[in-house]
Length: 252
Image (cartoon, rainbow, N blue to C red):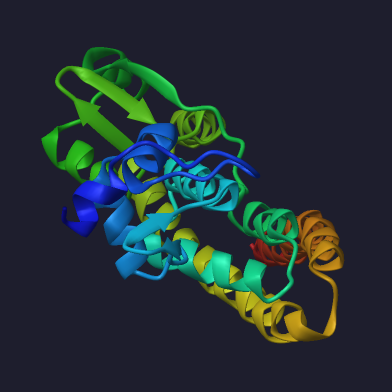
């Protein structure tokens, strides 16, 4: 009898539950070939050998279920291997995943707005043509699905409408938005660099739970810094523009 066919037979009695390869695959809800692939990738430890038969423990089953959960969360197999490696080195897998959640939780809580192309055109009379739609798509502001358009942010859409109705051409608003996005990307890259260098870079020197708490505290701090800085800059720029306007008026 071959090793594979022997392993696919029933389990062994007594003590903690042990599984032959077919039983383990069935309990975990994965094909045997997937289980073998995980072993090849070092995601699953080798079984205990009883002669020619490999016997897997409850720990093997728990690990397979953990791998499945991580795959459902969007992790790659390589990322899962690194997480499991950290776990084997004594790190709390819950703390490791807590850091992952703190880092990857979306920063934006904007609510998208969906409408028809005709409804979008009504918001910007005479300014929504194929070129404008194509540009907005390229900038990542909208997605078009047939006759339906989804803008990524209801608040930003409302702000754009306000600017256009005040007399600013839609094309100019889109240009300003593109320039603003480049500036925001630079700011975000700066904050990521600071956090990666001075916080995450010390991961071996602090508990992962503390790191998760630190990242959670830094999130609103970064947002407040940008918002407060922009508000202060607007105060300076508006005051300078008013002073220039008043200066021109007084010299006329």
